[in-house]
Length: 464
Ligand code: ZN
Image (cartoon, rainbow, N blue to C red; front, top):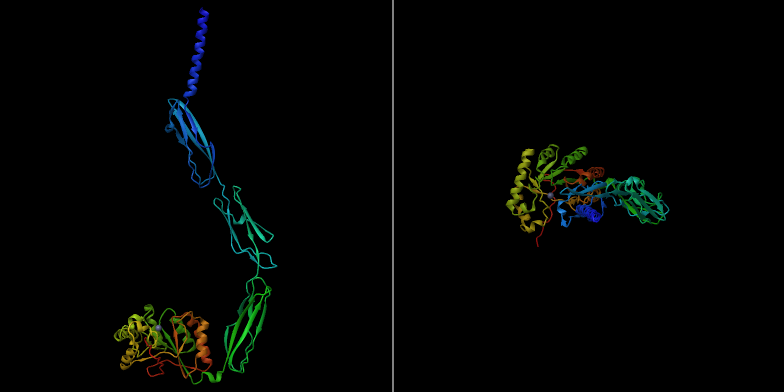
């Protein structure tokens, strides 16, 4: 009997031990990670912990878990996140590994259109390779020409490779470019010799494009002669350019005729350069001045000291102001004339209408006021001056050449030519030396205007 009791006690004791061990195993708090324990996250992306659940016996103790560790996705590498749980001395611990990885390929950008000349090797038009992490990888790009294509490839430090292909177009549809030696408009005198100055031709594909020059100049006869330059490349693209040679008769042309250079709208930022050009050639002109650029008022005095004539072109040069009424014109005129008096010591008795006496812009302010202004101003002893040759420098897109041609081709049709120009125009400044040289060599006499000189008058602008 005692033996049996001993045996039962032993069995109970073992059962008790087992129960305790099972309890201990089950009472260990439990952490379950959501997602993978080792995970990858892209560089520069947002890392979000997928989360976890913790239980103790049958209770949810998720909120008791302490999480440690930061994932910096702006730096490649391995990061650890530690999850710790401790309840009444029972502990558990989990770790998650987060790898910040670079999976983005570099970007290759091509410049140009891939056009390449027939029979020639492709001239690289340029490329760029940029990687989000490694930056500029352009110098590591490998290129390979293959079957009318260029293949570009590059890898970043993480081994991400990008390969792109440029398709080449074998084409030559670009005309040669002709650059004339000398101007495309030349004036020479009868009896002189025109010697061909030639032209330069360049072509994108053809190193030796063909140039034909056709036309001739008979310098014994007055007239305009065209020389045609035609360039042809190997692919048959043709370009042509014309040079005009104007043969004029030096002896008859300008002798006994007067030219009056007149400059409106200044003084301004270019005026002192105009004065220097005029000085260089010993030519005197007439300046129709305004106060549009008050910083340059002092140049009115300078113009007078250098022997030029000064006339009023109104203070504001504003159509709205000056063509409001006869009185407002005269007020504006007087304001300008006061400045002229301050700068030069005397008033001017000459004026020019903004837009000329033939303007019709006044019609929208006070129709017919230009004629009334003339009546009043003439009765007060003033004279006004229009022009009989406009250089065209105030309309469209004047160039040195256009201003030059307009003047030298049209001057001298009459005994007195009053030429309208503007000393605020750079094209005019550029053309002025060659204009003066041309007119001087043709024998014209340069004159300045005064109250009793030749005074061209337009017909008054008619308002409809
Ligand atoms: Zn003007």
